[in-house]
Length: 213
Image (cartoon, rainbow, N blue to C red):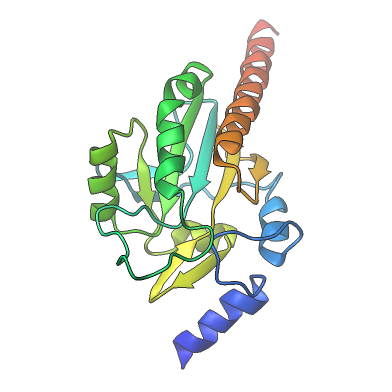
């Protein structure tokens, strides 16, 4: 009964009533995400990482961090062939690959990458190794980040999944940009790189000006 009440609240109070990894512009979940602009990611916020141990959601060694949330990758346990995926869940592997292929450009621009899902750390680790990801995946299986930022979720079977979104934060943990809904994955990755690189340049220029003064 308690799980049923929680699912109802997640779906109809915090969400838009749909069982999907996406959300329409102007929906409750989308508005809540965009309202994060100008707010801060709580510090510190460490999650289990595919790099080993735990890592902060916001990188401490880069001017800017791009945090992308996604429902779940299909590896190492893809859904049965006779089960249709929930709308919007397809593409998580592609999204990670697109960020992987652009990782060098992000790094050159001073932008760190963090992928976050509610999958178990061992599932994420198997996927990261198989896909040779150069950035860490963080497990929010305990919904720490989800609760801190009130991120929109949906339930697939018995598993609570994060909806797909991209947040761009500076080293001071302030969120400057939110991309949502994310429907065109290549365009979203390109936009994250453009916005992240611009923010990194602004932060580096500001730091240089303070040093000169």
